Each structure stands twice: as structure tokens, then as C-alpha cells.
Image (cartoon, rainbow, N blue to C red; front, side, top):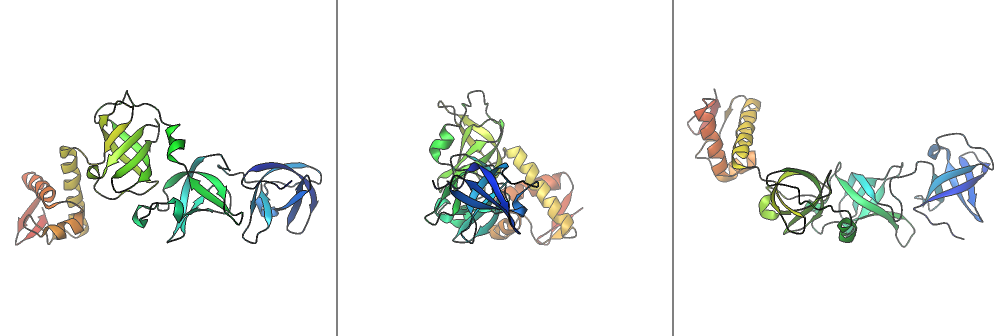
Length: 284
């Protein structure tokens, strides 16, 4: 009987070697390195281990039981990004596991970055190596709760689970609501696994939400004005930008449109926090 990797097994400790323990189940055996144990083991005792093949192709067990297994899903953190290959995630044991580029968005700007989280299960490739596989649309479909109690402009915090040119789908962090963010309701491209904060702009009949990441106009003006003040403080109180500056230079510095920049400048001048002359803006 060949032991299934990517799952947890109860095995018997047969002997101790210089590097660890030989553990068996039926006629199959594996190695349990000392570094993968959390206590001293004795011959003929039983131990629960997670089985997988290491980089040398050896069947090993670890007592560091991961959050996920084959058929078991959980959120895991992205630790590293390898262009063209994929991303490595921490599943709760020493060795990180690959999410293949085949299971990530086709354009790499939408790939998760370290610190983002993916909802995955485990699988094996043709060489019996472990892979982490993001949950499918059907898996999330069974997780959603109806959002009929949500109201317009309610704050929503969620993690992106699908990203494409049309928009992004999120699942909210606490309520498990499904939310859709149209590409016109965001200011930048989103990443798979990114945590975002937005507001409800529509509660649909099917219990899902339409969400915007663009603040209400007055909130946005507050944010834009604060960003300009912070920048001025960092650069010594003067910047070579004003209300007649080139839109591309404004966007490069502040990631905002010229019209939004001018509105924020107007507010700050009205509040007597800044002044402009010679095409420059000065902190008062």
C-alpha cells in the first residue's frame, strides 16, 4: 500500500538513526528528521505526521502539521515570488510550497506579493511534488453568505480571489460576502490575494455586492489634501508643482488626476496652509 502524500498519517516509530527516526505504516516507511519533531520519540510509539517528498525525492514526515492538506483548504501567506515559475506560500511547515504560474493570473502585475494571502488546497504534480492550488469558483460559491443586510456605503474589507481586465472578485474578511469591483471603481490594478477596503455601492438581488474602492468625493479630497501636505513636509516645504503643472508630472508624484490635485490645492489655500507663486507650491 503506497502512502498518500500531502495528508496526515499515524505511523509507528521503528528505530532512531543519526539524522532522525525511521517511521512505518504497513510495509511503507519514511524518515522523520529530528528537525521536524517537537519532542523525543521512543521505539514502537505512534506519531502523527504529514508526509511529502523532499527536494532529494525522499519520503519524509513532519510533526509540524500544516494548515492545509489534499482536500483541505485554508488561507496561506505568500512568502516569495519567482517570475515565470509562480509564488511560494507558507502552509505551516518549514518548507514552502509552490503555487504554479499556471494557477495565477496571466499577467504578472496581478500576481500576489509577499504578505498577500491565497485560499488553497494541496495537490501533487507528475513527479509527486507538492503544489498549492488556489480554490476554484465552485469552492468559494459554497462559502458565500447572502449580503441582504448590507447597506449602501457600508465599509467592506475583503481579499481578492479573482482578478481580470473587467474587474476583481473579493470575499469579505468577516462576513464571507461576495463582492465585485468593476475596473472603473478602482484607482490601480489589484493583485490576487490582496486585502482591500471599499464601500458598498449596490446590494444585488442574488445577495452579492458591487463594491467601490474609490472614496466619496469629500473623503477623497481629505485624502488628497493630506497627501500633498505630507509630501511638502518631506521635501522641505516647497515643490515644483502647482495648479498649472503638467498632468503627467502630477500623476507621477501623487497618483491623482490634475483636477483632483487642483481641488485639493484650492482647499489647502482656502485654509491658508499653502501658497503658490512662480509655478511652485509652498507650505505656510
